[in-house]
Length: 488
Figure (tube, helix red, strand yellow):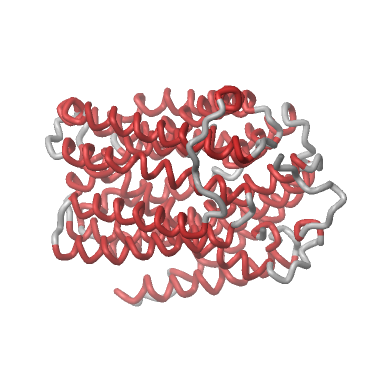
């Protein structure tokens, strides 16, 4: 049986932040998971320079359908592998075949219905793109299983290195292809290369491999565990990608492309920190739960850290967003400037929302997490079709307001149904919010002092890095940002 270490054992997390590997592990985690957002951002920049908004919209619309299968892969059974105290000889192969089946069936459904989907959105190019992405889904599911196993075993460093290798390798190939052959298919090739490199590197470092074994009873237990998470994740998916579908349906693929362009620019930057934070939150909450520890202190650490890091990045986009679009993109993409600012705020307002999954997964109260997501997603489902006919700016504003509401609502749900003490989280979060506010005010005041023409964005970006570093150091000094939360 796979058992957690006794609660009396001393782990790096218990040493008050004195683990000497904390800083290096934090850097590796940020660079590894951040490489995915960096690569996606670079490909977005290149796509905006070489493709029209309508062409980019075709690709992003196809990705919505592929991402639904990805969501099914990285939810439910994925979390069961990480949290379940089961015999690994039965657990790992059983869940492997379940996850691969999900990817295969999902991909098959996309491929079979590709022509009908393209016809519904009046986008003939969509058919081939959907069919190609459908082929990749089973292989993406294998990567999901490998990720769950590495996370369960605490092998985060190899995981981050695999992610970094695959993302940067795919970026090199995808960028070269897009520059030589400006086409939506070049973006598909980039996605395929990322999956191939990631699967190859993860197979190289995996502590165990899949076997021909399937335990029906274990599969049933896993399915019962997964049900609540799948429901809530599906609702979250609608809130994240429903806007793309509605804009493409009511208006055009170009409008959907501009919306996803704004979303990508805003969230790609913030995801440099949200992805490692979420990965470590899932692992640390799960470990504390298996050890029978109170997770209120962990909640406070991740809530405050999210405000400092995610909020700081988001406010950088808010302040410098207009300069960014003007300096780097074709004029047709300037229509997305306001949406970029609103999307950046939406990413900052996700700090409470992102903790719901790790908290209630660790507490084995997935139905509560599903209920929370039901409320937030229901609001999104209402505002998305209501505001889609008015364009991407109205859509971006409405969804951002819903995300703002999610902060107090998430804390209320965690306190009421998670039975956790949110007092430390509120205290540290208030301090973190003050630091981000000071950073934003200073950056805003200084970034418009001089008219430097085309050099303004470069100078202001350097200024943001300097002020950001000072803010992080202050956050560590005030103990609202603890590097040890990004350790093994």
